[in-house]
Length: 362
Image (tube, rainbow, N blue to C red; front, side, top):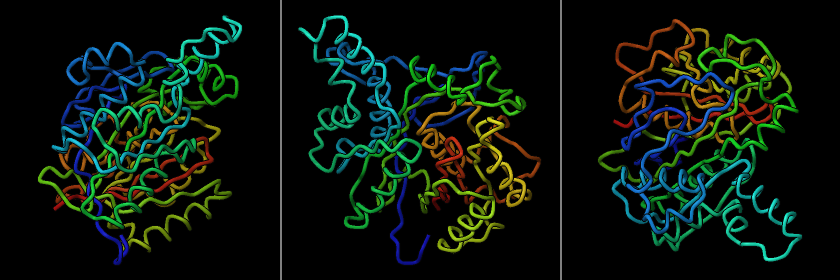
């Protein structure tokens, strides 16, 4: 973190993912395995979080997104945030598909508006705003592989103006049939079925599809239950060579006044795609050979905002000081004084690269 930048705290977390989660945001105490190439969210009883009258009108992904946002607010002991920022790669494709199918079936006559309204990218941000009575800043980023990182950067900029504000920031994407069909045709997803825990042993083209919704409350003021500190976020678009990516990493660390030997662990966004992981794998070998290396996409799958899952996992590691064996990718053991600093290095389709720095809250 640069000297003139305010400190940003993650005070609350709420997540629903293909792995078991809890209201305290603890991840990966128990691991669920999948024998197909599509990982979908494990959902709780939605009635514990959403009014049953409201619940019956909501689509599946709106329920998931709304529930994770409510879990986050409860975790932070916050009723109404000062602003809401959401991020998604493709929004609510299921509802969009239903709306377009209805347009064709009814020849554009007497179309019900529900699927259209719930299919817009900002439907979740609007729903959270109405439910929490938040009349402040409300924005949604739909920038594919950079969506969640853009949301984080927006929140950091907003907090520069008001350190005491509380922003609710989240990323969500769903594993829909239409997206899987398109992704398989473009060889983004594997054609052969594999078990998710064997993803990185499968040296073939494509990865596995995932989904999830993760929300965070960010503030310049730490709460009693603060998880960790969000240090910085950097976006790197289409690095051509390993040198380009390594140079961006070095500049990022230098700007935040930290050296690589002070990083206690790296969360790598390698996706198990032999065609698109080559650059991040070279970076792992050249820069992180002596650093504890963790991977996470075999547990949540690949989607535009999968880095939000990594951010939640990183915050959980820093607060709970618990490192699940299933994420370890090398034999390097963290220092005996615990994990104090984590670096997330993510990529989406070998196109959108990002760096996120997390540090332990004292």
